[in-house]
Image (cartoon, rainbow, N blue to C red; front, side, top):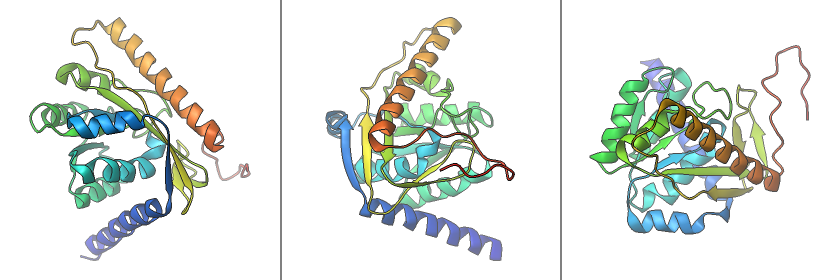
Length: 239
């Protein structure tokens, strides 16, 4: 009983922290405002992509920008323990969750995403380097979903000017209250239905390069330094 109460309380605190911090932030579009407007106008499902260390910002941004304005979202969440808290927040908001990843439950999750896209007409949200990395390495699951459903892959990136950075495998970013959030949305692309393994690998590398360049551009504008990797207890903190 106490464990359930503790879990409920933790999810409630996380939900309110995400919403309250976002309310104080100023959102500035570096590129892609017209793409945002087009998605809202067409109401066609898309596959939103963002890097794992931007989950805190991207989840609440997608909720406020798309979900609250009628674009239903299904979020791919890892079956690991840390993914469960985000899954519970998404469900509290009224969104759907597909539990799985490229490392655990991948086939089941891909089936759920395909169902959401083709039958429920729900957009889906994927972190192509989650849940365990390697950081900024694009895994192929989103490509397969686009192939099967002929749905656009839309890369979204956010960069805060002021933030806390966790000592995690990917340097998880949490924006500080009252900061500016820079946003970039790239034009959507649909994967060809027929691809050889070699062609799919070429497309995977293409999307990885595209998303990395998008992030580097935004991080440079926001003065977000490159993450040096998780520190061990014996390593000093680097400012």
